[in-house]
Length: 215
Image 1 (cartoon, rainbow, N blue to C red):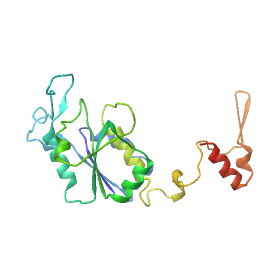
Image 2: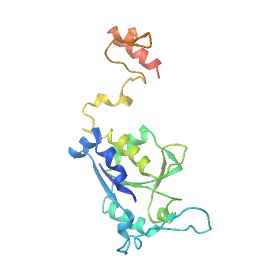
Image 3: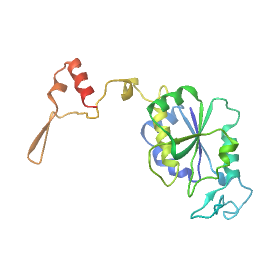
Image 4: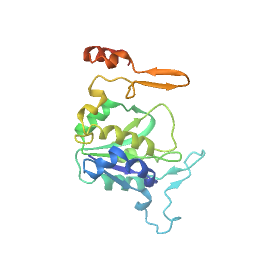
């Protein structure tokens, strides 16, 4: 799986991709992450000449990212790949969930994330390419970078070999939102906080029933 990220702020991904499971997945070549900055698809040489935002037609606050630099960036990312999905982040889009993550991991070799900023991206980009509008929740964020990280994390978990043990996929087994580990008793504030007895019983049928009821 190769993720192609269209963003004005590629360095915002450094800390998350440079740690833990995703870092190992990249090092083990289970996934790839590539960045495309729309500024690099302008003809200017100075920072001022490489600006990619302008005032919105019709008035209003903020600035809008121009269409052409983003179109060129997407075209570069898309290349000749046939199993590619282009995702456009918007609060009004289709709600992302684990089912979507599973399907994406099976169907595509390349996923392009278009990360907006400011007042958004010129809508003509959506006429140049077939995109799917996706939301990670009913709220507005500063940009599309956080949603892109969420999708990379969730979809990558479905890619074979990214998780060391396939049983680590909570959605593929009976799991509970509440988990416990040693010691059996934790003392704090004058209280003894204990692990539920059923988890100490060794009776896996009862444990599975307890986990189901905790959902």
